[in-house]
Image (cartoon, rainbow, N blue to C red; front, side, top):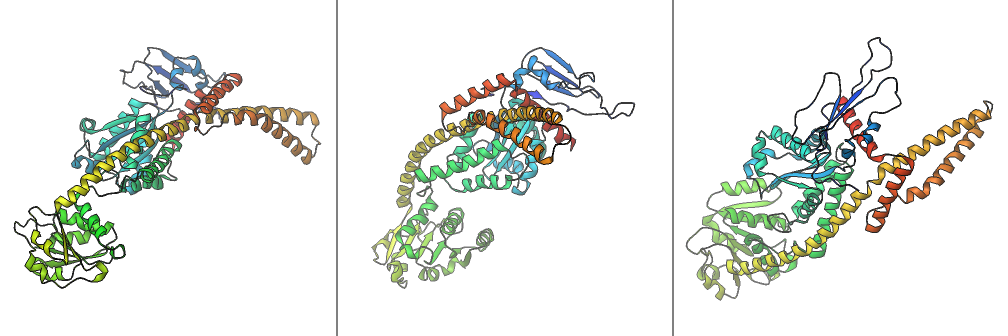
Length: 544
């Protein structure tokens, strides 16, 4: 079992073409395939007019030229690869590669130019799979990351082609993309998408939005040519990992920012039945105030009053959160609004307290459904709510220091849970790699069935010809069914020993040994078949 790690594979500079002979006959001219094995440093393409070329860079100075002459049409040029130095290419498995830029590696200006709208993902996948060395592809484009996942026949050429494509679509020079991109291969790429799906690569550890975005990649990719078995399997497994991590570690529990902690604390202090019906007042529509509003909405709040010096910022928030009723009030009406609120969040830059004891004591009492206590959640520094307000029996005040303790405890808890999540990811990564390994037997299964079917058909024709032309259709069908039944029963045992889900490493090892044994016994040459299939796929793709 060979797994590609630092391999430079064949470049399909041009693909096989058929052309009619000069005398107008139906026979096609002999196709020529030149397989050039040159040092990896060689980059120039060798293309002769009318002579299709396959360049195979595998680190040797061997030149192998194979011509399929019309005198031997039954001999496939590709089948002769097994005797050449290019055979090393055919024994390498395609690599899963991620080429990405994220909030950790690239500025927002660059990520904005590289971003691909969801509606454009199918087109992007099609264009990526049109590149010479890319078989499958997927795009994960969010506000914090732009990552392209591909299955590449050659790692370094695949990366180069994708990087050039990214440069072409974004207008950013290749050199600049290379400065900020990160590259991960095979097991590292698998671990990365699993960590992303679990929220371990997010700014807020364990956040849940990224899992929904990974799910969307699978949803959009369904039915798209190029979103193939390996990539779709990778993303589906990543979704399962994200769900498992959140279920088993509860990593998303607990607020880890001051604004989210403020909302969480307020909801903890309110009766559960009032979490969505309590009257909410937010004073200040700056950065922190906006975050408070967003966290309230995320918790199910659909109506709130926002007090601010000007309406402009509130209008912008209202435009962003269209499904929420946000009522603007000027700062001059602050006390009137506080009198009608159960919970008051303050986040202004005022150097003097907005609420003192004498202000709050005159406010009408709140209802018993919120336990008769008006909550003041003050996330401002300097404080907007005076400490004297805590003397009132009808009010409770919480400031930044109270919230920081909650945030620190939650962050520490999430870090512990992240360590637990890594153990889950390591286990799931092994399972995925085993599943990929188990796919190696699929070409052998197909080849063995085709081999048996050719023998069955040939022997059936011999049998029927001996029986004469006057045999009935019923007899023909019976003989045909008999031959199929014999072949299926003979193949049942070998097929059972070629099928494996990858869950058991011992069984997987035995399955791969069986695969290689069958290849030798029946001369199936599966590796050559895989290469032939890849080249033919590229031929058909470019002929469309």
